[in-house]
Length: 272
Image (tube, rainbow, N blue to C red; front, side):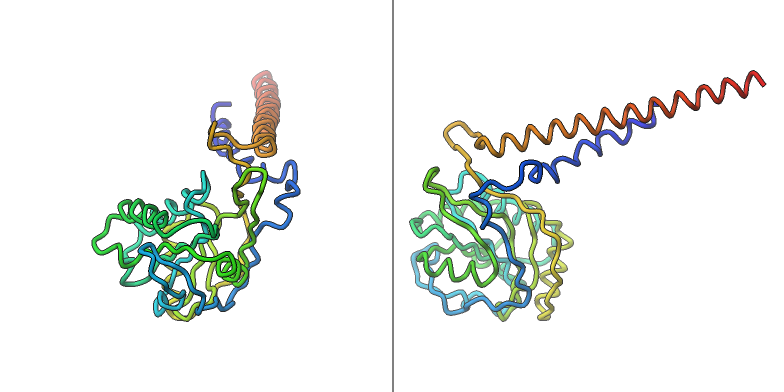
């Protein structure tokens, strides 16, 4: 019987993947997501402000592959995880930001300022920790029109929630070719280093990846005052816990029955 319990920890992870499907999407999330636009051209002439308040265009950061992160710097949860996940990923590859590729974070909150971008850059560059990192990480702010145009070009759909004064958005990073074409998407907040390295290498040669299955995380109704998510997300988490318990109990019942049958068969063989 003991050998069967080796599988129980693995089964416990299953609801983490599917719990978002238990209740379906809340209405606010119906138009939030990512449309994979492989090979689409990002608009290179869009104007933003960098972390020092200088006017720049997206095209200035190309000529090498770019990891694009659409976030906002005052996000109470998911955006920080996206940026930290990016740092963890590129820490594990021999390529160097600023030399082999650039990372460009663009805020889609038009209220944010370049000083907020500078604070976030200092935090992330410190985590990255490689010499000369400042030249390879860029944190931009801009008008609503500019950020919406960029987001639309790469298929990133988000919205502003007036009830919580926060943005509702998915999480991903996007690899662009040196010409600014969409080469690959990485979803969630944890991006395997080997996959990111391959994506950057392929993008450097102009290769466009294939569409992949989406497993999206959403930043939705997070209350920074008490550090909790809203009712809909908590309901999904509870449902995930119930699903886990159901799977484990069902597995245990099956294994007990199987072992009981084997025990009875063994007893009959001994009597014979």
